Image 1 (tube, rainbow, N blue to C red):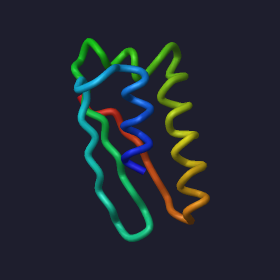
Image 2 (image 1 turned 30 degrees about the vertical axis):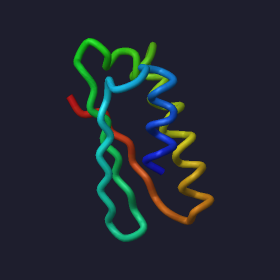
Image 3 (image 1 turned 45 degrees about the vertical axis):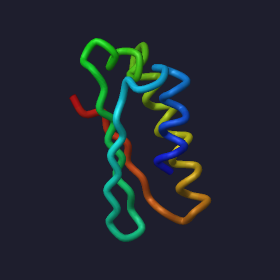
Image 4 (image 1 turned 45 degrees about the horizontal axis):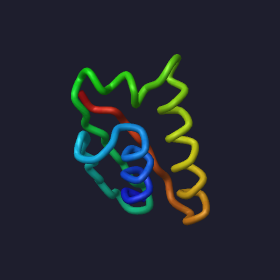
Length: 75
């Protein structure tokens, strides 16, 4: 799951401009994205559209794997 999120973020931000941390709790996975404050707008997108799309994609993958997932943008 972390690899998919990193792949998506590389397409948005480029190489080496973000960090993804992963915390597992049974069948639930918490992913945190850390980016520079000036790049956070690119991840959020206009009206939150980009981050919502990222969450939707990861939710579909998690559903197929019978898991839960949450994605947060840390500052």
